[in-house]
Amino acid sequence: MGTEIAYVRGDATTPLGKGPKVIAHVCNDLGGWGKGFVLALSRRWPEPEQAYRRWHRERAGNDFGLGAAQLVRVEPHIWIANMVGQHGIRTGSKGVPVRYEAIDAALEKVAEQAARIGASVHMPRIGCGLAGGHWERVEPLIRTRLADRGIAVTVYDHG
Image 1 (cartoon, one colour):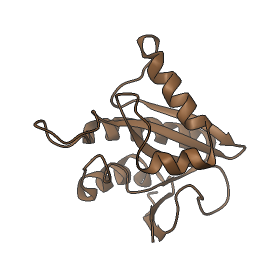
Image 2: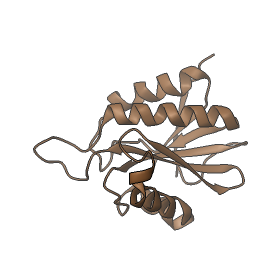
Image 3: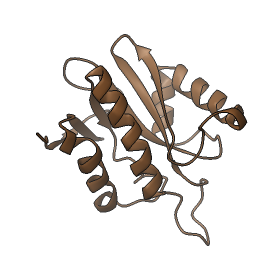
Image 4: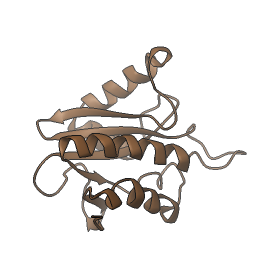
């Protein structure tokens, strides 16, 4: 039932293929949106940043936090998945900001939503840029949560 993860050169903000699509990316748990892939998202659609900032601002009354995922519809067949998988924004005494268990939990939520709407999932190498993570740790999470369930996944490398 599983599918292979497809790797392509290109821009995850212009996802390939037909049908409904979810573009997944990792956010931090501080409410900060200003570096990395989020800038490319914001150049195309204002809604994901607005929704993320509102979600963070109103966090006392919602599920905002590590492991949470928020789907924001930006076009009739495209959603952005804001996944909180990064604690803070700086590498410091506690190591890098990426939190693999939070990415895993968020991917689980994205998988449920993608399956419900029959969507493929598209992403850059999440958690491996500013978050400081390693793809060897992230890829198995994507395989288990998405590809093994038969959800088509495309990973985009700029170039």
